[in-house]
Amino acid sequence: KRRRKMTTVYVGNLDTNANAKDLHHEFDRYGRIADVWIARNPPGFAFIEFSDDRDAKDAVRDMDGRYILDKKVRVEISRRGRGGSGGRAGGGIPAPRASKVRTEHRVKILGLPGSAHWHSLKEFLREVAEPAFVDTLGRGEGIAEFMTATEADLVVSKLHDTKYDGVYITVKRDNGNGRDRERDRSRSRDRDRDHRSKERSSRSGRDRSRSGDYADA
Image 1 (cartoon, rainbow, N blue to C red):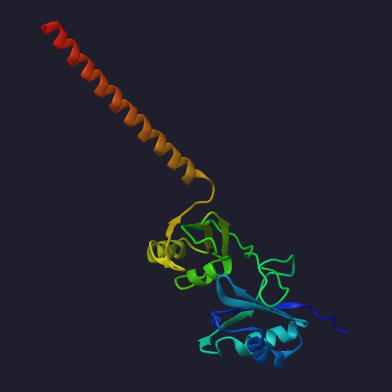
Image 2: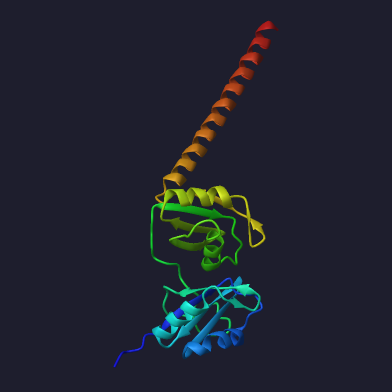
């Protein structure tokens, strides 16, 4: 007998008014649902855990691109599994972690609101290019990685200095190995040295001027 496998389905672009009853109404037909988790801060997506992976696949095949309430939803198999608790809203499915596909084409996002969630950030970036990896790091910072340099550059050009969740964000390339930060520190040290050099030169000029005044006297 085939062993059933718990599988979680991601529902994106979800109407903010949607609740667990709405999702059960749409997805119960595909099989037994073990749990529902609806994001509230920020809203716009949910996770539905099916007791059988075959039911989850049927739900994805039928529901992707359909409307729930007034919005066309994106439905796909989630890569994350069950874990600890946190950020619950209508169920016990934990807040998800980012996917583990890593590339060298990294983009840094700065100025994110404190409520920023990696999955809503992924949805935002998808407007321009499909990210391979997304995560939020706290302190208003996030990272995203893309399969090609062209996609990363396009995201920077299209989304830098645009609004995310009501605030303007900074989007820039980041090689991810610390050289950018070291280069920034080096530039800062160079500016400090230039500034100190100018101050010493200015003081030296004033001292020579005062010395000449005393000699004339």
